[in-house]
Length: 231
Image (cartoon, rainbow, N blue to C red; front, side, top):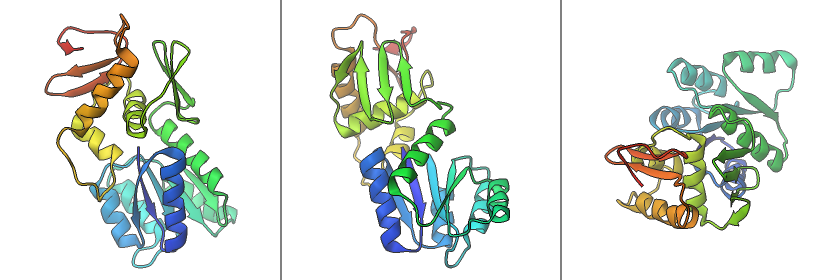
């Protein structure tokens, strides 16, 4: 998953970004003013936006309004020093999905972020199940037929994203956009390498394959093996 943090207090922004990277495994981009935040939000595909309200150049509420008006639907978690009811009501009516009042606990922010991303993908439960595969996104653990599967961090992130879009064909470009941050130097076959590792750890020795390649289109995570899929 990929998140954007828009926060002008650089130390706080870095702490939030580090928490999302380390505790949720997200790729995170940082913006320290409203104008750059809106540009990045509209230029990239994000699974979550963490938005401070008091921003230079463009206030957070204006950024939120323009972001929603342009058709973007990623969940937005607002960070605010305002805790009066009318301000909160205005934020939620403007398109915010949740809010945290400053100062806040970083663990609570990460938990709320994970819940928003799950709901944004239509997967409100913390455990994603595909056949006998279980992915616990709260614990970032994977079990196959009750047996713990040890994955590399990027293998887990690829699998979690595919599971969040289970039964849908996910292109290589979509995976790259949601798994890497703005500064990543894109290398050609990195996704293929992680898919190969996942197949060895999840599908090897099993009669029922879960990870399939639709040639020329992308990857799909599902139990059924349809015609035209390269298993």
